Image (cartoon, rainbow, N blue to C red):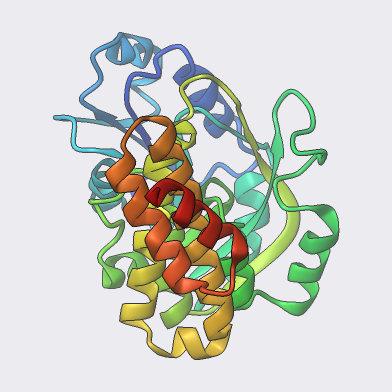
Length: 298
């Protein structure tokens, strides 16, 4: 095992023993081999520990009581010995060129805070496209660079497709441990505010769809997304000027509206009313939000 690797790859996992071996295999089968692999078991209650036994001589393993994905990632990064961090989800797969592509860039741009690339969908297209970032947008980002509007309008960054400077990660305090879904977006906003961020038009990982995908928790995803946007505006007041007040209001309002509809369907009318009131306050010109506000109010 390397004592001074160029990259530390961190996989945090919780109850994914059936999926984890394929993820670990994809990491270990990289073209680029100057890296260490750290696996953090975040209090799994399945047979995660047993499924990792065949890899024990090739990984660094940490078990901790269940503390959530952000805390598990932070714990893994604290063990990291390299200058560059790769954070992988325990259900996705690295492409063979993953570290080769990303490290080639940071080797020539050591001041970069983060470089990220595209991902594909394992098992075929999703949302009528082959890649997570549409091909035309991917080419534009690589050619023109990434701006705050790109990060704000669509959550384009997947940390499974990124390399992050450990100096940058440590300086920013790592992942926000109160977040379970939107932590990648939050960290990306904070990195972008302080460090150069670059994009490469290549596919470096594959997203694996399954019933246990965390992003399927719509209520939590929307609530955290709202919190992350408000945190961005609080930490960086210039962001609202850069993005435009109406763009910010529209995105927040739409998330409150989606949250309200989900809460209403669950029979949580008071919370739904509060969320649609906020959507209507943010976008008072929206007839749709006013309609639901009046309908649910009655």
